[in-house]
Image (cartoon, rainbow, N blue to C red):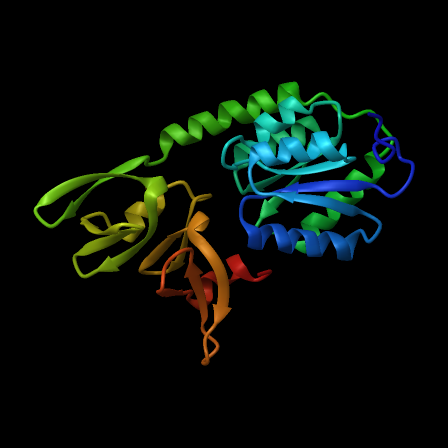
Length: 259
């Protein structure tokens, strides 16, 4: 199927692939303000859904989160290379930015900044109707950098739960909270204790997965359901499937300013 939008005729279309609904909606709203003519035809929340959306709609542009369930944005881009222009959505990583810039690939950083998104929009506008670039070399560099980063970051921890020591993968952890001499590790099925400090965890965990929201708290961004303010105006996070709210101190609220 020939995509009229990719060839520059008619209103351009796009799909957004971002596994965090809040971020996806934020990006959609900012794109509507910066590029009213762009029509977002689908928002996907995992890599397989993104691939299906591209095959179904043949959009001119695909905005792909690098880290998604089921299939990464890099893998999706490899599958659809040459069929649409791609802009990656990424948490800040110097290796990735260098690869993007060297290969002339468009990108949007998390948390989304309007000024940076405006630059990406202008670049994408200028490329509509042109041949899509060969992403193979850039994607290989990004994949190599992502693999090296994953090896550097903490992947699992040993935590005390009662008299037992439990092995917990970081993907299971909803948040960490400092608790006296220990740090509380909260998962969907219970709480455990470790001796690592919040500062040590900040240095060892993947910063694209765990954000510090308070001097005593780290949260898994994939566990966040929504951001709200209480009656006193304090910013709070509500987690998926949990009753408690986590307070965000003022120095970390910029992470959520667009939400």
